Length: 137
Image (cartoon, rainbow, N blue to C red):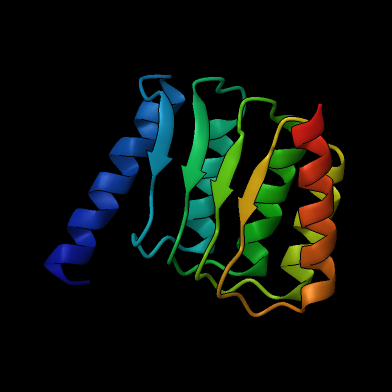
């Protein structure tokens, strides 16, 4: 592990701890952090019950469909997250399907960005439609 990777891990761990302690509010930018599936699981666990974070930027990380399952479970149960950016990750059709099902159980999420992904367009269109319905409410 390089020095910059160790530094990124320490920063990530510090931010997860702050999320658990409800010390961060509003938008949480974790883009370009090389977040893995296991780290995404840890983050999602720390966000359970957190009502302070309303936007989550997870662009350009290393997680895939396996990691998305943890995020999908969080989406099903949270009402505080309004925006999530998942651009440029390793999300394929299965991950998009998990997100689609989670969004159907969530009425508060109004934006989910999934540009530069590895999934087909059909499920993405269904997600866009569901989010559009959330905005109307």
